[in-house]
Image (cartoon, rainbow, N blue to C red; front, side, top):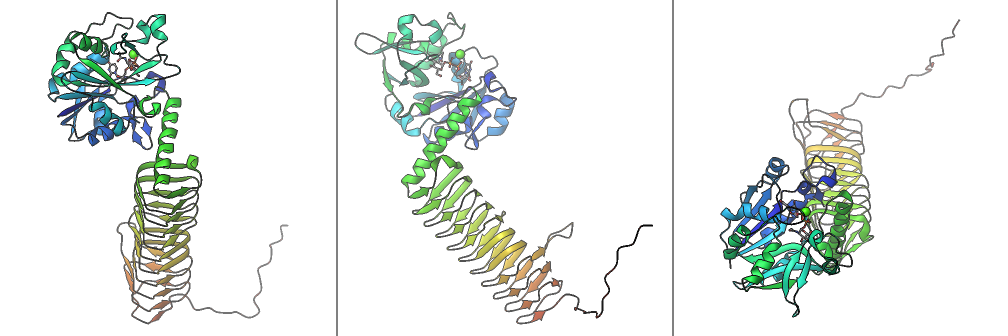
Length: 455
Ligand code: UD1
Ligand code: CA
């Protein structure tokens, strides 16, 4: 059965009080609309049609992708009118309607809904709420069959007492949709073309409206203001935390943990409080992450340890390697197995071989560092001359004394040693000691300067 998905995203979202179109407001690092598109893709439809209006250009620019068809709704005349704008592009057996400001809808819920659709049947997602104020009400006949949806503003007091509300999400046989939408009128309390009026038409045409409900009402919660946006964010994070815990992660506090991307985890992973994972993060078995770490687009191999307050981006930490506290691994940082990076160490485009160490207060940029090499405290690579960048290459078992400046391009071969305080500008051969600092002089009987007396 072929599927077209229409995502309504033309509304303004006045209550956000924002220059940004509502659907671009982020939940967990991605726009609300981005989340809906992500879920839509998992249903493998033949088309995804996004109806845009307010901020159309910006929405199109931010989300442009080959598989998306953007449809402009110039004036927001109602949800039925919005879907009608996409009609010329629809050709599938089934059309599913989603909303750009309802980001937490689960693919599994949509699959249950789609399973209800046939030539003779619609699928309607409803939600039973203690307070359904504002929702269209699901009106059922004496047999309990859905007869119509009545909008809150058009409802009688008896209808307002109905607690089953319309989520807006529905799946309909594509062949009938054009005809139903063509028959909509805007003769109602809001003067809008209501998509919901399609339900009564379908019933009149002899179709059955089958309903499903989400497992969790938050799945169908929209965000109209920043408070609701924050509620969606917390709910998303709670769901992500539960998913990771189910896979074998200990979270010291699931309420102080944030994922803004895609995380895969192994077993017996330990994550302390206030950790933020962004982008694509791969965490293998037995990894430990200390408090207050930000980890973006990185891979942490088995048993890697990240201590408190470290910041990783585009980094790979090998098996049993460790970094921090206060380490900064910038893009292109690779630590091989059991390499060690200590406090106040910054790496950028630097490769640390197996068991190599940079324990304290160091900057390594554009550097290739061999296995078991030890970098003394306070060492920096001078990789940039103000115009170009150059490489520093250290062999295996090199010993760099404390407070060295390694002026690139420079090669220091295996087994070489550099003296503390050296400014190394020339290559050092295997096994050599480089001393590149002024020789110490001790001057006898030194008289310290005295304070000049003011007259
Ligand atoms: C709609 C439903 C209501 C349901 C509720 C759930 C209708 C008539 N009513 O009401 O039964 O309980 O959702 O939240 O469908 N939009 C457009 N173009 C338009 C109008 C709306 O793109 O011309 C988009 C909006 O951006 C929004 C969504 O459609 O994302 C819903 O529109 P809105 O006017 O907020 O519908 P509700 O009044 O909430
Ligand atoms: Ca409305």
